[in-house]
Image (cartoon, rainbow, N blue to C red; front, top):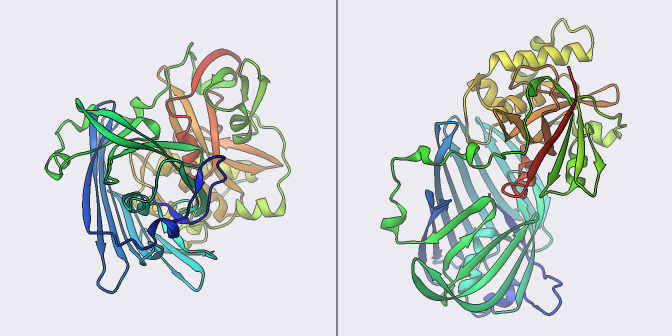
Length: 474
């Protein structure tokens, strides 16, 4: 994920507070290139290459490219990501361009800083959306962390707090970097002197081990991902067994207990651990805590009433970078889909049915926009949900995505569905499965849109679920 960073300091007790300006004072970075192979459970899924070049006119160019390959329910998937950055002599952002290419769904980004304003443009399906953010301080990209470390001035006990920005979610974020002690770590049977560094953003931590030259030897990231330094020749080698790593199966959750007819579940009770119960209850008004000591929750097909403010109503009926509800094509399709609806509930049922019937079921690893889905008419839960939300908003109905896990074939899988605001309640819909109402055989962990998917990462590999009972079926 692309991250833009603004310099700051971390109030970290005994740690020495530093800034990028302190680290780079009187430092001239040299040209360099590094390669990392990407693994999950000892299976190689991709590689990454980063290049730093000093520019003749001063400043630096930083380029990154990465490839990730795997499968989703047996369907091969490939995602290519690149980023090119122009930075000044202190590595502060001047401009950047990048893209995520995943076949049918590709997204490009570009941004620049001028007169203390960061302008960012995101383009999907040829449809650009531009946003502006105040930049009172110099802005840094996450890609500069490695050059900062290589300067030789980021020492044990030093720390940074950086305010970050993610152009995918269009959110400002904080990032923390702390330098630990020197130690020896065994890498591929060889003991190497390294320094441990910890980076944290949005509650997600990565642990890096860097050598005396500041090169990342190995990095342990969220979701069980491991990146190891390798030669370009070795890093570029990808085997033909892409299907060996099926991401949906890898990150699925095998619960204690089972649900006989999950699509008919109206009220379910679960014992949940590994995530905060506050995260669970804040993600959906259908979910409530029964016993916070034992982690017992109840999921009801019907939600509790909630009064939205005018600001919230505006938010959930407005255009967003991947939800182009003001596009003429989206509006036209939405009007046709809900035509004949007797009331808002009937219109939403017609809309859910339209999306189910008109979007071909196909696994996708991309970052879809509603307009792109309307054009390609194919995808999985992300595509169905994004299009539903945009079309609902296009006809003036507040709508959002629900992100979490759903029970199917004996396991919980990460999934997206939708919610629409009707008669002071969020009613949840399931356009991917062709259901008018989302069943209770699921647990929401976040809500909003695909930019909130980062909130799921902390649960992956941590959440455990025990199915207590089915209180009611429909």
